[in-house]
Length: 259
Image 1 (cartoon, one colour):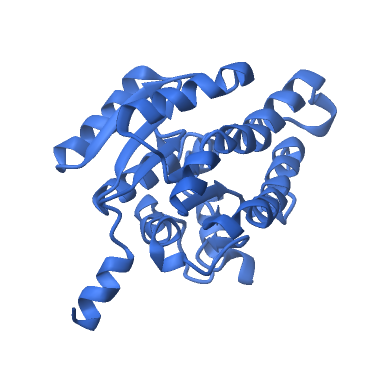
Image 2 (image 1 turned 45 degrees about the horizontal axis):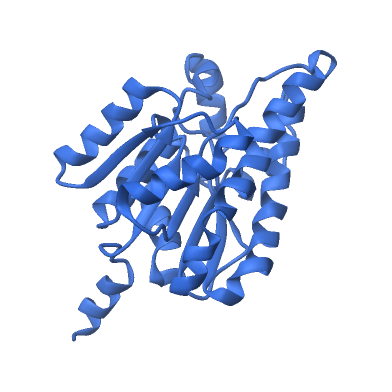
């Protein structure tokens, strides 16, 4: 085997099954597509059936393997059943991407106990409880990859982002704690912290040209993110190329946090 072929094998996911939550749009959809393009069989999970089926069809049109499972992850008591549906769809799961999330953008004075709980539950609790359903099979195969989604707000405060920022700050520590708990069994857990990308959650920003330009100017590269900018890191963290990397959060932000 040549050195080039050996390196390519590090990133080959053709024998892996990946579950991606929040895969109907935005970051989750882009990451699911990247995993499929690298050879993984991808199980897409989200609430909106039509958008989810569209994402799966898009992958299949590129000769990828994708199946859609419509489910509400906020129903905590249903997580074991949702995980079992994923498992039955394509077999034992080796990769989990926790991309489902919510940002209600409420001023601090308007945050209710209900909206606080909703944000913390979906952004922080669900990634733990849902991922834990797959740990036995990852441990049995001595291979697992968990990718959480952090944020610029994991370390910086933005207006109207108190609950969201608290949840995303927690994601960084959750990632470290997951790594401590499971990496001894070959299960690596890392997080990506995207900068500003055009998604449904950031539509209020990208619909305002002045705000969009201001944020682009705050990066080192001079532009906001494109969804394809997430693909390489997704495959890296999901593959054998990251065998000795765990508990880390990587900012994909064009140098926003470097300035």
